[in-house]
Every structure is written in structure tokens, then in C-alpha cells.
Image (cartoon, rainbow, N blue to C red; front, top):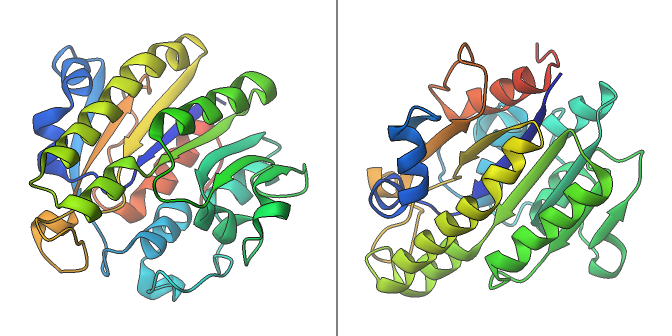
Length: 256
């Protein structure tokens, strides 16, 4: 069994990641990280892809094909499987993750802070403002890590996606958001590795110049994937549906 930090950088396009994420590029060049590019499932929308990343099923298979479909995932999530295996779970994430894994609909006063051993995400800090700063989100994740020592920790930031929707993927604001996320990873990844965790970094979808990711285009669908500190025999995913099984393998739990 190993610890896993699962980093979901919302709205990070593969091209922007390759150009503007110098820290992750350095790890990859040094052989300390393994990198791949994937094509997001259709439709390339956030909530449907969150469900895919957490269940290993396509949006058509989960039936969650709209961002407005606020309900629990219809299949066991990675968090549910981890909890069933006796692992400790935590997430600093957008509130749609709480709705997919814990309880729907999300009620901020009730659900923003989650400390419940019976829930799939036992320890959670969930935000509901798209403009929630990434630096604060990473601090939330670090607070959860230090206080609860989870085996599975999700770190889900929205800064890149927010900048893309506001200004488009060809804007300086979007590029700066990507660079800022890379800097946050440079700050936190070494500590996570020293803690004994593997680190998985990916995105749900890309972003286009219109500030959209609804279309079936490469720029909207191509996303990056990295593994850091994972055993060398860990397979890289070929599709987004492979990510949850890879994460389960890193945690030492069965998927099938």
C-alpha cells in the first residue's frame, strides 16, 4: 500500500502544459516523472469528466453528460473503493466532487467542511466559487494532509479553468495561471514525495481561444498526465477511463 496525491488542474490544455510548466518538464527530463498526453472523453465538460476520472467510466456510461446534473456518481468512485479497503481519504476540491462522491445537492453550510469516517471522502474542504485562489486551495490540501494523514488526497484547483473561461486559452491570464500552478507544484511536490506519496497530475479537459471546452477539438480535449514517485512498472493510462484503475493500483487496492 502507498499514499497517493491526485492533482487535478482543471482546464489545463496539453499544449499549455508542455510550454509553460517548467517544473514538471524538469522532472520529466530528469527521469523523475513520466508523462503522457490523453484525449478527454466526450463531452469534454467538467462534471462528466470528474465522474470519469473517479469511476473509470465514460460520460455515456455514467449518464452524467451535463455540468448541471448534480447527483452522486452511479458507480463506485475511487474514494468509495479506498474507504472500503480501509484507507483514509481526503479532498480539497470544487464542490461538484462532493456531489459526485459524498452527498448531493451540495449545501455549503453543511458540506463545505466534511469530517465523517462513513463518507467516501472522509475529510474534505470543498469550495463553490470558481475564482477560489489556487494558492488557498493548495493550503487547504496541505492542512488536510498534515492533520489527517490521508492515504488518498485529491487536490483540485480551478484557477486555470477560471482564467481560460474569462480570457481564452491564448491570453496572458491563462498562461500565467498555468505558470502559477506549476510553481505551486514545485513548492508542494517535494514535500509529498518526502512524505512517501506518489503524485498523479492531470486535467479534465483543455481550453480553446474562445474560452470554451465544449467542442470535439484537440485543443478542447488534449490533456496532460504525469506520474511522479510511482513504481517504474506502473502503466501509463491510454485513456481517461484508465486513470482511476492506475490510481487504485498505486494505492494497493483492487479495481476489478
